[in-house]
Length: 230
Image (cartoon, rainbow, N blue to C red; front, side, top):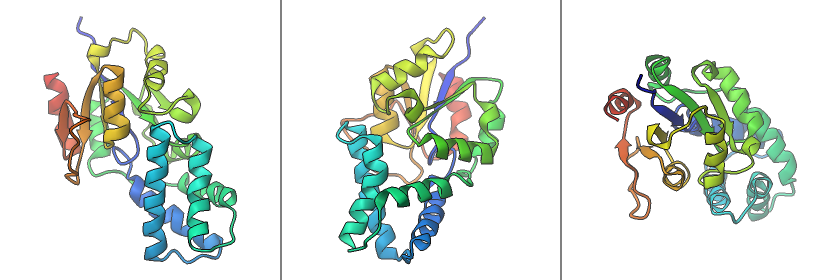
């Protein structure tokens, strides 16, 4: 009997629209602290946040340093006397409350469910991801959900994937593929782990010579035919 393909799905901006949820949660948080979320402040937050997560992936910062430090830097740059830790706590709560699907995500999971062994692999904060998964109702599609805060390591580290693979019964790397939107987290992580990689790149972001995925797609609707050909 042929064994099922193992699909490791990233969550944020692969299945659930993190950018949309983040904009709502961040604006709500800033207003709670008496700060109007102007375009300038939101843009600068996004720049700081992106750099902080990159430093986490490179092992320069810890998760708590990212979650609090991005607000501390933002407030310092704008001369605002607010506590980063309090803002981080409020933001995580606001972010956990709802969800928005990436176009085609719900239909994709319905189509793949029962045909393949599907898992979530996420670098998100546990309380946030658990809330968003509960809100979206997609937890039922997955055999297990791996969140880096609970695993003890972050993507793209090999240790993260080793711990995930240890929890997958009869895991075989040649049967596995990771699908995600981040070259530095998902694709580099899959390469580090020795499995096939698929970059979900709906915005046609330029690639990198040092991180080359096995496959590139621009729409989730491309996944079923891709998986069938593996």
